[in-house]
Length: 448
Ligand SMILES: Nc1ncnc2c1ncn2[C@@H]1O[C@H](COP(=O)(O)OP(=O)(O)OP(=O)(O)O)[C@@H](O)[C@H]1O
Image (cartoon, rainbow, N blue to C red; front, top):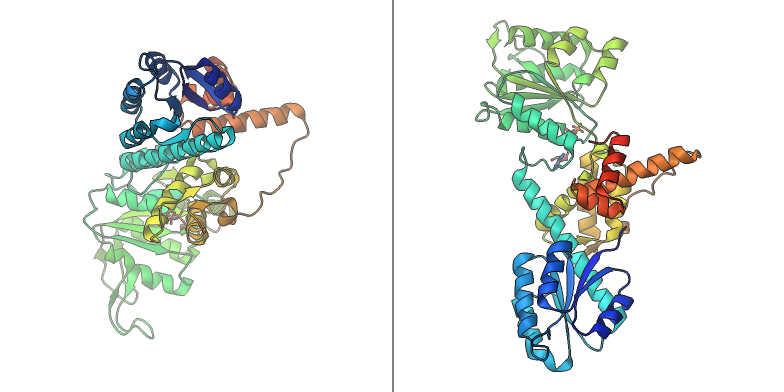
């Protein structure tokens, strides 16, 4: 990781040198007066600033320092300003804190302690930036409840917006827990049918012999136990949207009946004789390879084509750039609120573990993991062990140097782009390369 920019405002050149030397974990830029400080602030946009209040021309007072503080907080209100003060400055320090300075540290400087204060300021700044990013994403979210910054996932959302107004049947393909039902609900909400019902049924969760009557309903006396006429789920969705989850698990015999419904748009209740016209929008989903099932002969080809008027493929969480950390923050905020816990933060290591894990159970697994962590964590910090993630499996590393280099290059580049929210300049800075070099690398790896 490149060093983080730290702006040090100090007119005493000896002290400036001492600070540079003792804070060598950071990329220190130093200013000796207000004007220079403002120029450097605009140029480098540091998250943290340390400042002496006594600056020329009022080196013995605090007027320049306080004026600078005010300007910094106007230009970049999120900046964490740490005031370095002498013993006698107490009143001015209090003033600075009241104006919005983040913290203070007394001279003579204790390098170790000051480093800690600065580290904490960076951490808080990063947490607040993440929080802000999430609020922004929630506000911008094309589909309520869907959190993502991944280009692939955002494309799915845009397609949902496009197809929602039509009545076309939509097939959603994606791994378990990747958000298929959420997308189906989004399709319904954005459609002209949103004042009618959204009815969902999971074909894999209902025993084969019951599924038909669940779907189409039954007449009184149709079978033992059919004590009264009961409408099916399709009928309940009249005018609205009907969501068939795990369609790949539907038995062949029922597939034929579903196909007939899709062609004729009428249903017959089990044991009934009359045909009931139904107007519903059908959305189906499966985590299975439907085309493969067709080839195997366990899924009807004609039904497959009927269902796939529009196919939306939902990327797995592992494939979404930067979404893991974003979703983790989102769920953490949500569970802190619903579990009545004070605001919590992830330790940097926990965020790295979240980024590194492959999330085979996708967003659902993440949701459960973060809920458990919020409940189990003892303080306000969520550590790696609170997450309880299994140790990363040891990948079968390639021993060919060129391949390994290529893979590593790709990995860090994707990470930098994700962390910078797609900002090329920032990503290039993190990677320690120039912008044109990053563009070349992206082209080399086929990243747009
Ligand atoms: N992008 C997202 N942003 C926020 N929450 C999400 C997102 N995707 C999924 N979720 C949440 O994750 C959980 C699982 O999503 P959902 O039930 O839609 O997945 P699914 O693909 O239908 O799962 P399954 O195939 O197992 O039925 C839900 O609680 C959902 O609200």
